[in-house]
Image (cartoon, rainbow, N blue to C red; front, side, top):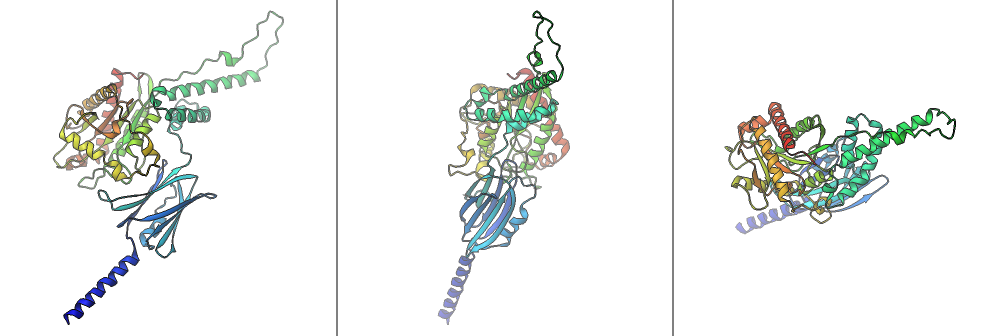
Length: 469
C-alpha cells in the first residue's frame, strides 16, 4: 500500500514537471520606455529567454522570435502599452508563430538601429530581454541648442541654415578626443556666422531691388555692394550648463518610505533649474541648459559624460536624491571627483551605489552598444577637479540657506559620471530620500523651487569669480 502511494506521488511530480516544461518561461512584466533618444522595450521573465531577430524595411519593422515561450496575457498587454506619441514605435503585433515560439513584430516610425540583448538578474529584476530602438538618423543635440538660441535672437529665418551647418561641425567635434577644447564656443561661433550670412543675404537682396544711379564719368566711384559693408551681427558667448537628472527608465534610483522615486524627483528639479538657467545671463552672456535626459528613460553613465562634451558644456551638474543605510542620514551634499579615495565612508558608499546604475538600468555589453564603446574618460585633470570644488563650494553656500547641509564642504569620491576631463563637474545630493522628513520636502514644489534658485545662484557666483573662456 505504501509503495503504491509513493508511485502515485511520483507520477504527480512527473506530471507537474511536464506541465511546467511545456509552459516554458514565465513572463514577470513587460515595460516600454519611449523617448526621443531611443525607445526601450523590456520583457522580464523568471528564466533567460533566447531570441532571433531580423530588421526589415519598406515599411521598417523588427521581427523578434522568442524561443521556449507560450503566448500570455502579459505579452498581449504589450500591444496596449505603445503610446501614440512614441517617437520610434508605431505599434506592436504579437502571436504564437510556432509551438513554444512567440513572434513580436515591432512596426517602426522610421529607419532604426535596433539592439537586442539580455540582462542577468540584478537588484529587484529577474532575467530581462531588452530591445533598444535607436533612430538611424538622430537629431544632434548641438543642432537643437542652436535652433533654440536662434529663436531667442529673433532670427528664425536663419534656423535652417544654422542647423544644417551645425551637423557637420558637431560630427567633427564628436570624433575628436579634444572635442570640447577645440569647440569651446561652437554654438556662439556658428550662430554669429549664420546671422552674418543671413544679414548679408538680406542686404544683397535689397541692393539688387533698388535702382542704382549711373556713374557720370570715369572719376565717379562705384558704390560698394551692401554685403561688403554690412557689419556682422554680434552674438554673445553662450554659456552651456549640462544638467544630468540621475537614473531613469529601468533604474528608479533610491525609493523613499512613501514610494517617492529618486528618478522622478530629480527630473522635476532639473526642469525647474533648466527654466531658470534659460532666462539667466552671466556678465551679459546668455545661458542655456542642456538636459542629458528630459523624460523617464535610462542613460548609461558614459553616455551622460559624452552628451555634455558633445554640446561643449561649460559645467556638468548631476542631480540626485540618494538613500543611506539608516533613515537618520539627512542634509544636502555636493561631490567632486576623487582620483585616489573618498573623503568619507558615506561618500564612498554613495559613489559605489551610483556607479551601479549601469547594471540596474541595463546596458548592452556585447561590444556593439555605441554608448559602451565611447570612452569613459579617466584622464581627469587636477585643474578640472579644482574648478569642480570651486563650483561645489559656491553651490553649497547657497543651498545652506534653503535647508540643512549634510556637510558644509565639498566631498570627494570616484563617481563615474564626473569623469569629463575638461568640464567642471559636480554631483548634487538634494536631500536623503531615505529620511522621511526630507522625502516629504522633496515632493513639494516649494522646496524644489527653492533648491533650483539656490543652485542657479551658486552657478552665477562661480562664473562671477571664474568667467568662462
